[in-house]
Length: 398
Image (cartoon, rainbow, N blue to C red; front, side, top):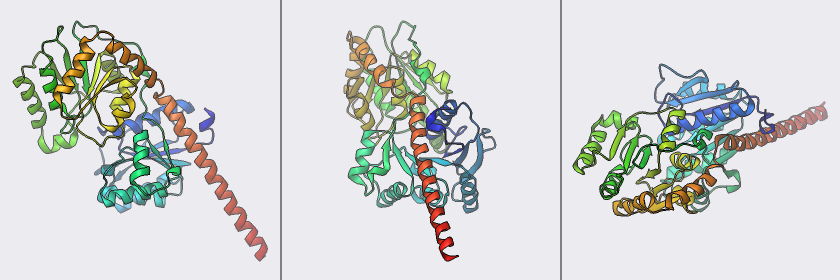
């Protein structure tokens, strides 16, 4: 067992969790797995999963499925989590019950164990309620973690809180992504992956590829991922069908491939390693954390991305090209440079590899373990001090 985990006999995790298809679920499973590897055992690493209803199936490590907005479920979850040395929460407004996910405050305030909360979203322009919830999370948690310097700056500039209670630990990525691998086909491949839905910028990406059809050899563009469950529930296949119709209208049948699988970690890593460039055409200007971006860099891949905050931070040293949002002409120019200009892709790949080596899950998990151990030690000192004062008081009364 690593020294940083020596005093962590039990850890609780609160988040969405597989088989739920969600970025936070994947993150939590990966963090838990890396911590299990670090300590040489996955015993006493228990998960309380979040959802609007209970699933018929769950993994063995899920000891309780909390149903949002159910008070008795919340109380039972808190009782289970309080038996742990420390509890890790993942935070996104939409995964907890209550208005703007306010139920997380009940979780943290009633827990007897110290807590670490990882923020997956830090809004630049939050509503008043969102702002107050986030400020209260930082106030209640033993430590709050953000995953980019941009998120840290936003907290300092936009929120009223003690920034000393916040630390930055980057999003992790599988070390398997760094295993050498390459496209063996005759045509260069661009890859976008993740849950598909409005806001991903795929329409802009299709327009950009329509503008590079003159390149020889003709590039391939693989869009890998399932439709987002909420989009699927609301619209069925209509969104994906619309993308396919747009690709057909642009004459991209020989360019674009829709691969609607949701792959496990090893299978996804193999697909990423085969790509020549990763394309992130996202429309959001708020995104301060992108797991896909981190995975691309961990694989040493050149990246073309819209200038969302995390991309600006990570690609500024030359690991990729930044383009304005919803600008297919600029995106096409960037893709043309990576595909056709000698030396551009290798130079980006070298820088990406250097950055990516710092983002592997074992490194990230050890950072979390170090923070957790410090919190547990601090809690033990406070408890011992309080017990000593009570004992001294009783002796004086006697």
